[in-house]
Amino acid sequence: PCARCSHEMVSPANVTDDPESAETKPELVKASFRDIFFSFVLLGWTAFGGPAAHIGIFQKEFVQTKRWMSNVVFNELLSLGQCMPGPTSTQVSFAIGVTQKGIPGGLLSGMLFQYPGLMMMSLAGAGAAEVLVNPDGWLRGISAGLSAAGVALVVSAAVGLAVGQCKDQTTSVLCLLSSIVAYYYTSNWIFPLLIFVGGAVSTFVNRKKTVVAPDVNEKIAHLGLNRVGGGVLIVAWAVIWAVIVSLVSTNDYESNKSLHWFEAFYRTGSIIFGGGQVVLPLLLKDVTDVTTVCVDVAGAVVAAGVAGATCVTTETTKSWITEEQFFAGLAIVQAMPGPLFNLSAYIGAIAARRAGTNVAAGIASAWLGLFGPGVMLIYGILPFWGAFRSQPAYRRALPGLNASAVGLVVAAVFQMSFKLRAISPMPDASVVIGIAAFYATHYGVPRFWKNGGVGLDAEGKEFTLAPWKMPAPLAIVSGGVLGLIAWAAGCT
Picture (tube, rainbow, N blue to C red):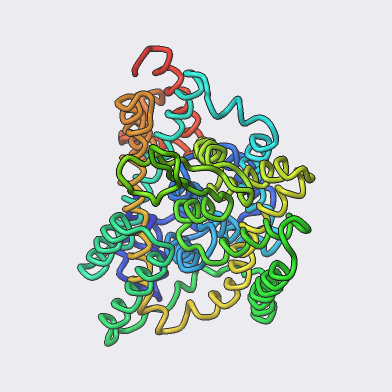
């Protein structure tokens, strides 16, 4: 089934390397505003597990199940997000809506995906953090189950994407190397570099091959803006950055706190590649400021490292929030649905409370600052992507671009799996829940409840019914229920 969903639709006149005929494939469906609303309004509340899990959910829901686009187009959008600064899963959520219903479709899909996490993190920062920082055991059990199911979707996505994109030795090796490097070495520039190297290698290897044009049967319905509008938006992103940097340099923090918050988050959102896991360490440096003082036995201040010295780390007046508050928020956001970038709303709320200013202004400054650059860039780039995706150079590079992007998802599978087991209050139960969720969503459950799993064809002959694959949102919710049951049963 994964291989079947991993190729573009073909017609008899446009034969590709797809071993299956066009007749065996379901046709693509163009979504309506109603479809977008009811799909994303649920995802916003069930998209647990971080950006890689979100990509897995999108791939399951909109490529395999609802067939809004082919796996090829989905992977191109994923590669675009990986190559641009900003939150990848957020950019893909906007792009899915744009390709279906233009600018309003993108705004609808993107905001429905963001708002549950934004709302909950804003409430946490504004006063509910005490409830969520030290959760009861039953709440930790639910969180562990939700996270396990989320990781299972990442595993399923990685398998499906690898089968679809790594079709020869070159792409298989690029996927392998990308996953190894991304797992071992984390940096804000390593993600676009790996994808660029993959594209360059693929271009060289395929330099003498005939270029296969995009499938004529799949038309991108909308690209949002035209190329002029896209160019204006990209320029606007750069101009805004330059203006706020200039304003911050001429205004001290005490006179305009919101401006300083917006500048810090906008700058971070403009230089970060790879999503939430990369942005969090940089945010810590921006929003907290501590100093370490060491004294000897006589009470004299000495340098750190002197034998017998006692060192104390204290917060300075430049710190917007404390390190304890930051790490509490980090724990909370990873148990919430939606992007990890929603941590910005929590930080903005606490910074405003500590500064004695309007909490809503603090949330808006931080959240819009961090999300704004990535959203502006995906809207600006999509019109150009619609044009250059048919260019020979891009088509030759595309297998390497996609294979390297898949390698990043593979690396995330191992990172998240090991981390989930380490932090879970019930490690073995979490692994079991993850295995069950992977099986139910990737391979499917036999339809024993329907005539014993047996159907009849037109000639009256029996055949085995295809297994029922659990929808991603239902798998997430089921994981939470199993986590609660595991907690109640004492599976710790």
